[in-house]
Length: 396
Ligand code: F0G
Image (cartoon, rainbow, N blue to C red):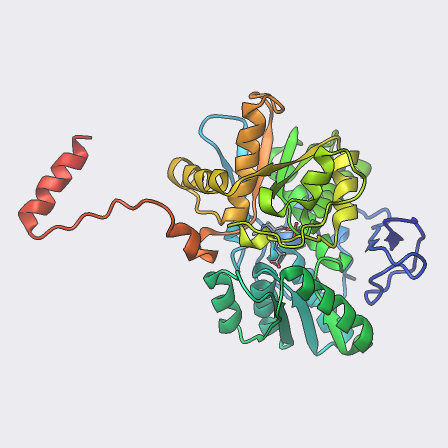
């Protein structure tokens, strides 16, 4: 394990969450794994296809729900693809990290797992903990958990703790309580680098599916773990000789919750905290992302950028993806696509570029956002009326 700030190296220890020297976050280094596309391609698709690149000894049995192996859907006849992470077992990319996190937690003999969440981590952890026979405790902000995510978490039987305050406070409580209670509870937020090891597999999968490395990978950014995880995945492929280039990483934040993008646009080295983040994309309604340093490193190293989009652009993008591409995505995923449209529009990204947009979660997660779109609901009172209506629709 290596500190992302002072670069000190530590022996692998799943309980080590912060660098003992400088209290920054750690990352896991996979040393010289024996990996090849031909071995990987002989296995089922999914996170565990890439087993040699994961920090799980081969003797350990995975706790899995078949996560990963998600569709890569082309956008009309362009070189742009949407990686639809909404088709994971609980409907978001979180399952990729959770299968690893819960496998490790179970193997450590932990009984209780904990995570602060805007909803997707909570529902994913609840499902995987159920599968493993562990107790899950989710720490949720007072407001703005979408209905789909909350009800999934209820369904899977997690303990639901609601605090008075925002996600950032829930995250702070979680970090502190884990430090206080030591090995009694195991944390599965993305400050735990084990989660990110699962999430990095989306990078492997993109290259696996496309057969090449795209020019840009566009990711919605909240707590900022995923963009760093994906960048780590691409870098590993490059270091191990499994890819011949690296993509540029683009992080998209909602205007009202843009601590990283705001700092980026002002040329600052550190984020501008948002005390009261506000956006319709509740998954990324985060003002103090715990992984900010990793995300800055990812964007800087890859020569990418951060950008913002407004709530109206997010809703418009959700509609375009739903009605032109055929995928239902939640608002934070739509934010990434909105960012892409904006960057093509202002010519930051060339129209001929090869682009993958990560659609992190399914539209069903957030019924409230779907209610905001215009419906063509037509009441009919007779069979004749229905027939006339259909003739009209068929006539265009
Ligand atoms: N998209 C969705 C659908 C998410 O749920 C999240 C984060 C993100 C994007 C941002 O990813 O935090 O790694 O930058 N959701 C977390 C949660 C915070 O609790 O479910 P990130």
